[in-house]
Length: 470
Image 1: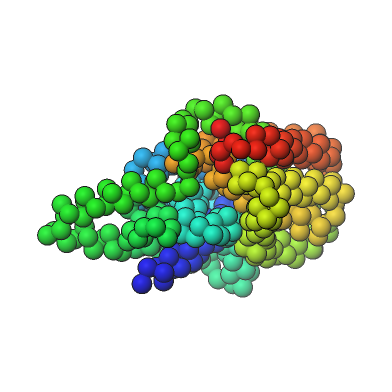
Image 2 (image 1 turned 30 degrees about the vertical axis):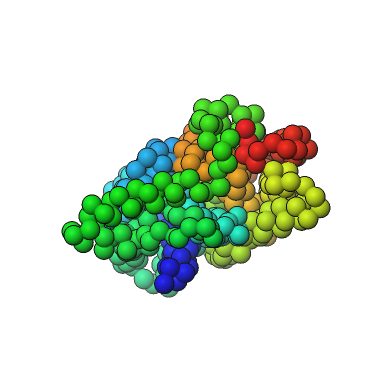
């Protein structure tokens, strides 16, 4: 039953994003455990403690910054692999990378704390690339494509929960080594699901005019059925062509090259949008322990870290709201007489504008040191950001360029994200408590509204232009 297979695929993709995809962003919870385990304690003097040692803080922040930036930069190469060779090759490489990263974390120790660098880098590379391949599952539900895409991103946002479970297990008395070894075993699921629930090439697009090609476990069976090798390869090539040709790209967009997409002004406003808000989010994650300790009692830090660790559950609920807003806006605009092109641009405007507004609210809350409102706005902003970014790329550009463009944009804001360590070091030494730095972030968040206004202008011009951006 292919319907059951489709549902199982979407559920599995969400499960993977939840437990493995966005795990690196749960760094504050893992950092808490690593500090307790005395990682990087050799950088501190006998007088200072690990929690107070600035050099130790810088090392933890550097691990996070390098890992996230490397993971995001790797997406440009991962996108190429996905578009060129298909899902099995792409997922096979990234799944192995993730398992090796988890294994290195299990083998690390306070004496070999330097192993955190390759471990977290591989976990970030594997996790972030996992999202780019799983987003394709939106093609399995044409009517609710945006909602499914944002559901994937919501699960990815809630991936912070994984390291929080590390912390809860550690606080309950379970040995850190046992926790990490168990995680290595769980991560093997990625290798299994790659060849059972994912297509060898790309996800098929469900439509009423053609049968849905079988994928995953069915393709594995075909590969082992020697009698039908030639026949299957021939039919599979036809399926693959149909899969790539029925993902919603109109005839005019077939002439659009990747370079033409990159030259588009909206591509650059979108890049500004994602770079600024992503850097703001990563800066908050990297400086969380120092920021919260600058004005809260030391006795409440553990409780606040626990609260911050539970809120990622909001992501899997909040992100689909962004997608639902987009889908509803598109449908309402069509009922009001707008064509498909204008309706989709107005839907994108709703998605990006709401994200920027929440980013401004988040920056204001952090500047005012309002702990709980900062937590809430942080998770709403983060959930909306990655959901709206994926929606923008999937709707504004040809589908056959999704992997490459998703990778290029992530490469760009990954490189931009390296500024996070410089800002953290500056704040730690020049701006204790990050008060001035956080006020500056309010202005940066306001600037991102430029992208929304550019999209709104696009929705008003060329009423009979193609759906895509060019």
